[in-house]
Amino acid sequence: MHRRTLLTASAAGLAGLAAPRTGRSQAQETLIFNPGSDVTILDPVWTTAFGARYLAMLSYDTLYGVDNALNPQPQMVDGHVVEDDGRRWRLTLREGLRFHNNEPVLARDAVASIRRWGSRDAFGQVLMEAVTELTAPSDREIVFRLRQPFPLLPNALAKSTSYVPVIMPAWLIAAPEKQVTEVMGSGPYRYLAGERVSGVRSAWERFEGYVPRPGGEAEFTSGPKIPRLKRVEFTIIPDAQTGIGALMNGEIDWQAEVLLDHVPQLRRAPQIALAAVNRTGNMGIMRFNHLHPPFDNPAIRRALLGAIDQAEMAQAVAGNDPSLWNGKVGMFCPQSPNASDAGMEVLTGPRDYARVKRDLAAAGYRGEKVIYLSASDNYGMSQQDLVGADQMRRAGMTVEIAAVDFGTWLQRRANRNPPERGGWNVTDTYLPGLELWDPATHLALRGNGLAAWPGWPDSPALERLRAEWFTAPDAAARQAVCRRMQLQAWQDVPYIPTCQWQAISAYRRNLTGMLQGMPLFYNLAKG
Image: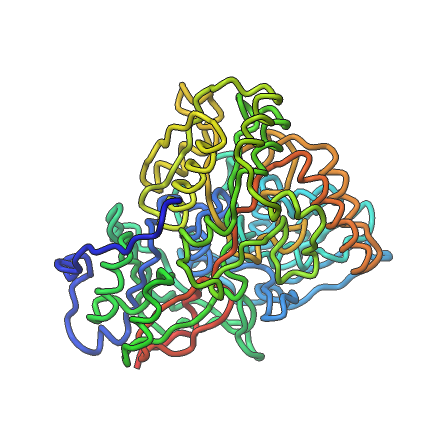
């Protein structure tokens, strides 16, 4: 097994990465954040990368937000009216909303944004299947006409996980099938494109024209989002130990996530606070490319279930303290009411690599090379890759790791070509547990072929069960459907869950106002 090793790179020279400071007052108004990897894609409807979500919550706003209990709350809208037995929803935008070019946010911008998001996002696709007409009869009114009632409409428009339904100007997304490369939002902070240095820095400044939602308390992505800081800067420090050194020295204010091996050291530092901002932790995902051999064969994917040792994966990523990780996870986040033990023996039973090797041969594997795509500068991903490749080799597979930086990984993962033409066979990633909470947000459990998340599994059975979940009459019925989905997933194997581990942020104690859910930058202040 590949054991975890501590990184020892020096923090020397970090000051050169930070933007120049002109005095104490400016430093107190500027937050320096290390996301761990660069924000290479600026379109939060285009990628599941964490950095795109951070950008979404800085630069954009959504029609609804969610509170700490995951209930949808009006955000850009004053509210809504439901008519015609649930088949017509009328949403009214709040007054005074403006984009960062000071143009007003209009209902037609929202309609264009919802249509674009609804063509790509799993939850959005279900919503749009129920929509017969989506219009903007006036500058502030958005009207949904539905084939049948869709009570989860606010939940869909409040989505805070991958593919955030942000509102963009209609002119920016005139070609909705193309990736957006310009940031023009109406959120608390304005993106400073001229200050971006690839692989080094991104920056935002407070948008003075932002109108926070009045009243209530800020929770997760809901309530008044107040831009208390003048600037937010992302300083990219992929090396974990270097990031810790920068944090301890005051060169950065906040590290998005720290290696769990570093937690004892940070607990002893009086100037540093630790927080589980993402309380559901991270969920590891071994994703197969279903378009090309050998993983276009479901029998080969099923055989590999017997080779994956979740405890080994978890230890490689999170260390030897089992209180910091979970090595017995299924298709849904363990904290979710949808999680179950259905069929879990395929992952929790004894690992028998000789048997797996026989099962692979019986399934038709003949020693073909497997290209294992790895993001070498992302610790959580690359450690899973090393262990996963080792476990596959123990099962008799021929594995070659293709190590690239995270930005290149994002581009190559989207490549549907065969591995010999720039594609891939298998890769590892991870998502917050909240993303794997239920079928509405669970990208990796979709089976809709070329429209699915990269890997492109085709499973009509999983899609039928997902549709059944949306129409289930109550929580018990929905939980029963999720149990059947997990059993079906062990047959179709769209991916293999590798483990769950805690996600710990570290920040300097003079930073106040931190919210729960994910790194969020509104309502933060520096003392």
